[in-house]
Length: 440
Image 1 (cartoon, rainbow, N blue to C red):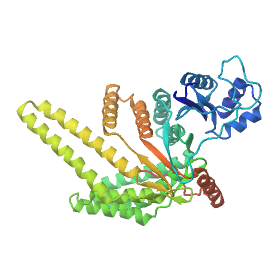
Image 2: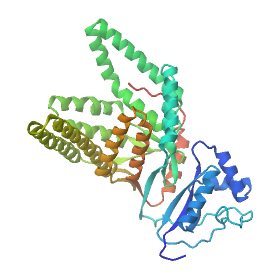
Image 3: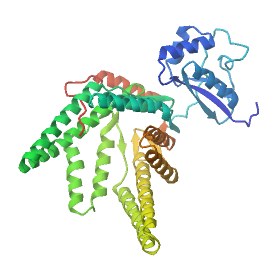
Image 4: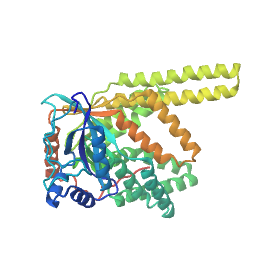
């Protein structure tokens, strides 16, 4: 093979969505004529490299054959051709089936200690696959008068988590739908009481509104803790340790001060909310750090307002000189572009400020691509009367994964192993009577 030619490696991800591990392992064993115990050992480490130094055609051949037996793999470019010293069988379909030896993973090259290693997120879902889940969720939620919505949420989360990979390992969502249903019943009962009391008495309605405001910080903390606890990566759950008093400051006091200052303090209120969320989340027992400054948020808010004012002003002038429809069209463009800029700029500010010990997130969301994503998703959703929504969600998840990376410094495996031991020691995965999600 030409030393200047791009080579590829095949990385094992696990079973394809909808295929159980036993089926995938059985197909793998049959394809390569391997005993079950060796296949089980191979699948025990999903990010195992199966083959290196392949041409694009050879790598694609591996992917196709493995996909047919229910095994999910990824084809990744290598900077230089690697010397293939593995005992892995030849490409599926070749005349030499490869005996009975288990495919051995060649050593995975890793960054030297302390050297940053950029690892992209990968989203493997597709629109039609998610459409089938989405439409069933809607139908069953309607038929059951909303009861199934708790199970629908879990199915949705599991699909997007399970198809999101970092360093060739997917995320997991393990929440119990019954606990979500209990929280929704509580919220529904409160809503009914709030509505009835508000219709009967204005004073009673005000009292209920005050009660809602009083309990809102508790609800926020409860919901964030629930979702973090049942979200995990490499069998280590995330955590949330925010306090109710902090939530009250971030979600009640600062927004109220922003209101009475005619919006001057809204960027600061938003900053306080993001700081509260990110700093109080953790991976296992280790908290994330958040280094964004309030000045960065004021810059985003002011530029967003400036974009809308400038384009909106041009629309108003042309509307008076040309035609009102021109003004409407430009106003719509101003809204989409300002909103796209707001989302992209804030995502870059937020994600580039998050660190976990020496490791960090990195984001380089592209404004042009996100604007096109926003416009095309909106148009297709309107044209299809909402049926495009699953594709829109999948396309958005793919965009986020494409433009977001993790930067690992040193040994990430050591951190994972350490956190797994700590979490097991603390029995973090054990729920309690009040371990429910309440959402209004």
